[in-house]
Length: 247
Length: 247
Image (tube, rainbow over all chains, first blue to last red; front, side):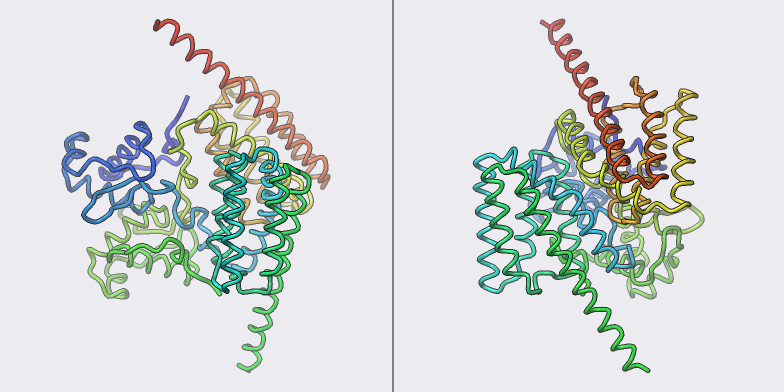
């Protein structure tokens, strides 16, 4: 029933690519989790009946794909979130970053309110503890005036984790991190809103109030969206001023 | 305002990785589109002030990340959908494929009905022509009893394209292709449903009927979901039979 991902987009492969694919299969078949240490070069060369140079080339491919990581002097390990690179949707190759930021907001508005709703339905006591901890972490950073981008992403990822759905857990941080790479919304005047809205989200999920969770998440993302529109507006005005001073 | 994707997850980079990052920046800054030919090894070595061996290593990294592709005897070109690999969510590393397939359905149910709704609002005459062409293509393949997985993905990607939202256009084919790698729903008895439901989707989008588009898409995915549940049920029964015959 299962097929390899390589079934899509078949390309002619050279030897290191084939061996990289075989090592990937080893990881999958043996269910090696994040942090598992791979056999050393000699063992893999022996097992896959290729030279050590080919193993080294194959490992480089797997490193580029974030499937494994090399810890110097310690060995090669399965990556955290194997196979997921920094920009898996290739968004850095899209030239209109303003449009991209707004498209991101629209996408978040499609998916995150429903995630919040399902989260409120399924959240376990442990999930709620996690949420409360991360909510407080963001607040602390805001009060200390420290950047809280990563903690904000973690908070929204933790909401996705309440759903128990593995796919949305992968998608949410990708959308979230990407948007923050283009526009630093944490520098804006939204801090007060963020604290209030995050608290309300945790409350709604804790009370298993699906309707409220959906509504609060919608309001939270729309708040962000308005802010991004504002930042874009400012930036365009800036561009015009630059143009003017140029003429 | 823009930051590099490398801002997240900073790792110590060796020279070929740094050069790969520089070539990636060249592609982004120069807005080289898919299919654009990169300067040759000599030119890049000269421009980036490194040896040709380093350029070759860097290009291998970019190939592994599907940012460029090498066409033998012709040169190195920017890939179609640069930076998006076959399995960008790392789903092949998740061991419970049945759960994964159901999580996929749930994710599709969150996002695709809303995409259909926005598609019905924004579809241009050209979008609708595309949809009609792809709808017919799937039907032809079904009538000829040929696998139509890719065409089905293309059809749903074309609906996402109607929204004009670049992000959902990247996400939809990823979710769609992945699900089909685990479960071959095209082999099921769903062919009649597929034809009927695809036609209704095109109709709703053509009439700019947002409510109908949402409803038809919901029904279409739920139909798929029931079918996947059925296939999983059969497969589990099969597993039990194997167990029984083993005892």
